Amino acid sequence: MPRSTNPVGRLMLERAIGVAGRRAASPGGLRFTERQLYYETCRVLRPTPAPLRRIARTPAPPLRLSRFTEALRGREPAGLLAAPPAVGTTLGGPVREPDLHAYGLPRLLVCQDRSIARMLLANHVHLEAACPVLDAEGDLPLDPRLVAALERAGDATVHVLHDASPSGIALPGRIREALGAARVRVEPLGLVPRHAEALHLVSGRGPRPVPPLVPLPQGLRPREARWLAAGRFAEVAAVPPARLLRAVLRIARGPRPPRHSVRGELRELRASGFMTWPDA
Image (cartoon, rainbow, N blue to C red):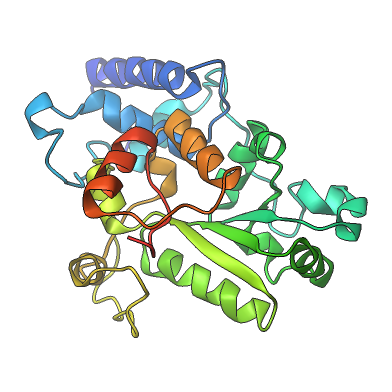
């Protein structure tokens, strides 16, 4: 995209990025990714009006990503993580803890987005939840020693954090297939379209038509399948960082969530962001 020729617009954008950086790091100096900062900047530029907060919606972004990237160049807001390492390098977790394979591992978190996995590790989620954090692109298929550690724990769970997109929603199924006969439960955390709508997350549009999800994944509603078929998607990075951390910690370190009523689901969405979705 051409460089902005409007100095006032440029100055306003830089100020919005500054505000967004402070919000993303709150509370307590959280670490966040560039993509998370972009979505926080979108919220600063276009906050949700009070009358619309109870209406499920996924607005279009008010700012082009290319313009944000240009305005961010040379700026390093406190808490912003550096660019992720190349795929194929380890992020941490069980690979750096070789003794882990010798014990039972009750839970594991796999993130579709490598940058989100880095953000969770940078904010010590793996320590607070006693749950290793991996990324799907660099750590799948799972190390057989890791699968054996999950089986030894008995009733172990692999939590999957993914985007509201066809590839994201298909990820838990891929992991189940890769686990084969292993006695390990796979629990998707979301996102799915209804989570994105309830949280008023900025959504994008990809190429269309989108191949239909056949069979329809358990827990995904026909209306959500149509939303995806229209080329729409919402990223986990669009969830405010503090809210994402609260939701992941609540689920990853606690017992298996119970089945929810629709009313209970909406209450939990407002309270902590999103939740496991096949049980809804």
